[in-house]
Length: 165
Image (spheres, helix red, strand yellow):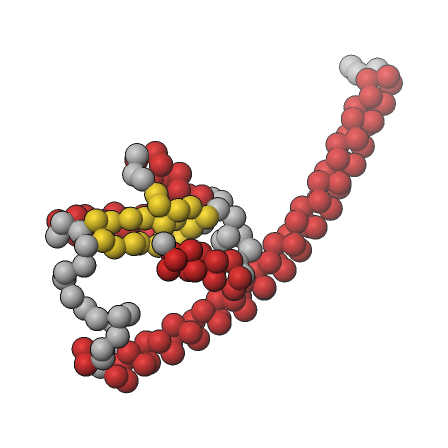
């Protein structure tokens, strides 16, 4: 049978555990609030991107791209090199998204290499960078830390560096 000293020690231990648990709960609540705010901010960004892509798709359908004389829509098989810019997550919990993105990039690389077209990769996001570095694939440029807090300015910098090269 436990004596009084052991019982008091056990009570004190439980109280300390209770205090630690309460502190951890407060910290996790604060982190959850920050994550919710970041998600709300990125929702606005995603909506704007959807609007832009919808407008581009509408214009492509409206002008039946085959008849447009534009360097952006001119479809020909005589180009020598292709840049593929792909976006993956910087952190985990997006496994399906990252895997599908990487598979699509690999399929595109194979398709272009079969046509004897040089492929250059530009990676945005740690998961894609880590994967292709592990595979020994050379990356022309890498941008890490963009997907956690995307902004128009960051996207503009990435596109401008791709165009300038």
